Amino acid sequence: MSRKMTRQVRPIVGLMLASAMFCAGGVAVVAAPAPQAHAVSMSEYQAKVSNHAKLKSQLAGVSSDLADTILQLADLNDNQIPAAVEAAESAQQAAEQAQSLAEATTQRLQAAQQDKANLEEQIKQTGSDYDDAKAAVAQLARESFHGSSTSDVLDFVTDSTTADDFVNKMQSQAAVTRSESNAATDAANELNTSMNRKDRLGAIEQKITQLKEQADQQAASAQQAASEASTKQTALQKLRDEGTVKREKLESQKSQLTTQSAKEAADIVAMKSQIDSWNNQYNNSNNAAVNPNNNQQQSRPNNNTNYNPAPAPAPAPAPTPNNNNSGGASGMNYAVPGNCPAGSGYCYGHNTGNTVGGAAYPSRQCTLWAYLRRSQLSLPVGSYMGNGADWANTARGLGYLVNNTPHVGAAMVFARGQSVGGHWTADWQYGHVAVVERVNADGSVLISEGGTGFATFPAWETISNAGAYQYVHY
Image 1 (cartoon, rainbow, N blue to C red):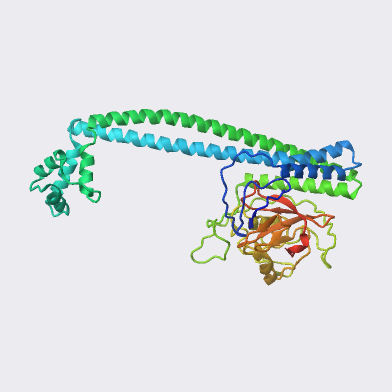
Image 2 (cartoon, rainbow, N blue to C red; image 1 turned 90 degrees about the vertical axis):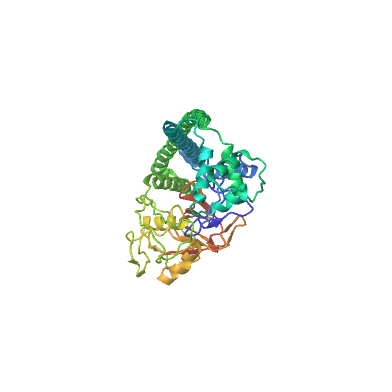
């Protein structure tokens, strides 16, 4: 996601940020340390308490059963599921590391076993007392008599005239002048002090025994880590299933809500749950469009760039959005979902810029999510809108309506280096792009967004100063 966190750590709705992130609009550059347990800060705790108290106040007068459903779903969205996601990802990483270590040790064991087999074959042919060191130096000497440059070494180091004389002196004369620059002498000395075949065979066998024990232990550890990762994933899925049940229950009982504040609270909680459901669907589909140059910003293809079009995950059914657009722009009365079939090259009277679908956007990035979500909502979107900050200008060039008024389904464009409420700053090189899911009564917007720094794809947050950004409509 084209966004970079600065000094202040802001409370994110749902606490979905797992680490500092950068999104190249087309690409995210992430410096992610290994997951580790951390205590909730006082500010995070206070934010949770404040959010819970605000939600409860919005539900004043609502039946206890429905209020409990909303509060429980909110807790799943904001606390339980994010924590379970982090735990599952940490366990998966630990399992992968353990498996990698076990495989590396197994390879070392196989190499040692091959060394043993080779040495045993040599012993069969020339015996266990054969002096490999002397043979190697003798070979060096023999090569010198065939025009090799080693003839200079022969004369300079030992003042020898024959191969036998050279071998004997190299192995017996410790008084030979040595220096760090004299590599030939050092090599010969190392050969002279090496173990004989019998000793080497014993050392290899001892190493094989050690590696076998180590490999067995690491294989067991890897299996245990994989089991723990599976358990964490199962626990996460159980929470998500619980969230789905509660969201469906909430949707069926929304008609009971009579106050505007209660309706808005319920809509926001349900939308957050829906966004997490999209994340789950995305992960399970495993069909995200992948750009092989994941560490490069998006650019138009050239002779040196190979894009690999891949089918995007099946779009989730678009929810019926709440188009309460307080202070909406004149003439913005179009419906969401729109009328553009996925992949449309021409819609609403202009070229959409959609030429290769979402294949040009890197996996899990803000630009990929904006493309996928706009496609889900049947709104026009292009394949080469650029990095996050570029979307507004690219859209204008294609004929899209772009202004500073939020609307459900609009692509929300964060300029390069744009400060957001003093809490964070959009990446200075790439900016950021998200999709508006709801315009709230207080003028804030609930957005969905991508980026590898988030614990989920997509993630969400609420932005208060909505008028400070540009919005790409249709």
